[in-house]
Length: 404
Image 1 (tube, rainbow, N blue to C red):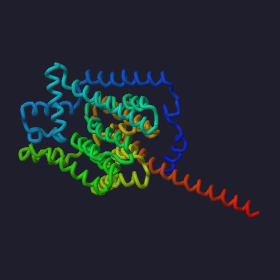
Image 2: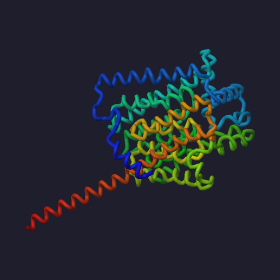
Image 3: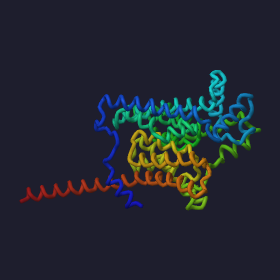
Image 4: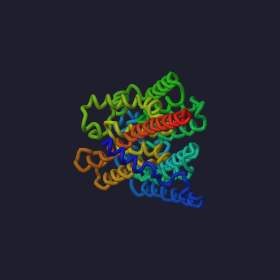
């Protein structure tokens, strides 16, 4: 596997689509941006309007109804697995539905489409800030990505809303990398955690890159404390629901490592790697802050032991800044997986042979993407020693010539 990945890296390491070598002129960039807005936004809204959605959409309607009459979302339904923040967002969107007479599912996914536009803007700004490519290319990369189009336009999950504060924090970091404004970064990281706690390891990565280890740990613990405090108004009636449906909730198994390892080793591998991932990214792989956020999302998908289709967008958001070769491969495989699940109707049942094979092909793409970071690091070390050897050899030759 390692040898195969190494050959792929050697063959395609210089291949990039729309890179920063000026393949598009100004007219081309304007055309690409307009195309991304019309097609990317248009497809999201078309799917949002034409399809009511799936199980999650029905769950949103149940939660919005509970919020409307002032009920306890953790005591009255098992179909809510997050902090109260998203429930309040749903309540607000439900009020817009009542005033506008639009369908609730269309209002929700239109709102998430607006979030996607903001994500595209910040992806573009980070691209330009890092000098990687023109901002309009980064903007277009995300808006036209089929994974984000399908998951937002049809599925309507809100991972993008939870990831937006991390993206904004990354942009803030890129403006002051020497002295990052850690207070603003803490605020944005906490907001991300409150929206959806699947981002917990991205928050951990963000904090450790933004300040000292001691302060990062304190920031993280304080964010977790605030996350816990948000549940207090729902106690004691909702206590068992909070524990069962939020804190210990597990997505569909039979994904990735869960097919090969017993549960305990699998869980230990996942948590150990994700906790250590900031140190691996910073000290071993020497990744930039923005690249480390992509690394965190890829590692999450490659090592997590329970999966939901909505998780597939997580590596895409920061991956759109760099759009590496593995980003495109992952996008292709994940898009096919989502499309097959919609066509067959198997949205969460992963144990059927065809569905399992399709889903785990996405895991394999994520795993290869994760391994590519380490292969790139290995090649960089080899190049460094090769340059050192060459420099020493040249110096010896010059010294020999001088002595003669």
